[in-house]
Image 1: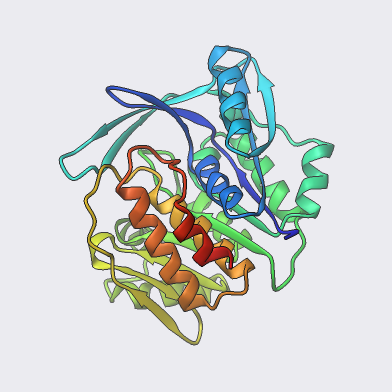
Image 2: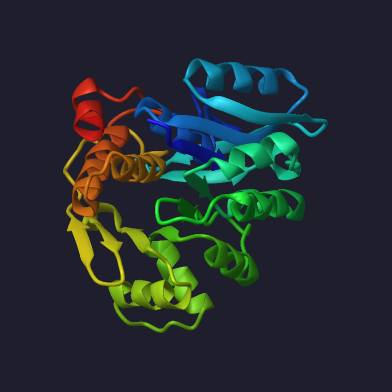
Length: 296
């Protein structure tokens, strides 16, 4: 396959009470697309420090090509605590390397050949990195087979109506969960109608290809202009849910690249997301039986 997938934004260390793992939603996304056979790149920045060196080494060992800049800002970290259901709470370090990404000729060349990009709101908290993300999106080809995925990932206070509007104007797929949809609907005065109707309103307003709506144990939806796909959430013993949404998005986009239908890609994404929930950390190896269902 010649498909190129890019995660652009934060690379950071997830700090749990008993371990430290490499993470950040864009890195999690391309970890899974790489395992599924796509040429996968992370675009970010780390510091001139031990954590930065280790981050680059670990990402390379996981099959991810990097377009990672070195800066004088520290490599990012996030403190993660889990509740009894394995649901995480995040506390992000500020003024980090990934807040200070810069655009260069190498990034421009990559953008011109990228089929799938995934970006979120967190890495846009600093205007410098935000402008780089927007420049990358604008440099990408604009075809029917180009997926510009805004995985909104609202975190703490690091978002605004303007940021979300600008991102929705540049993406063609929105990934959002039910709690985030409630926040965005209030922000954009969409009203208190059903979640599906709220998604349809956003879909029409921003001329999106589709919206991926995840609702935890209540299932997930792929909402398109003319149809809706629903999948129930499988029962699984949850270790933690960190990175499960990123695995969902990566699997769904990868499956579409392998010419799966939307409903089939949706089912595969749900299955892999459930598997990630059953494992500790955001980057478990994908079992062969799941992988082959996606790439065959």
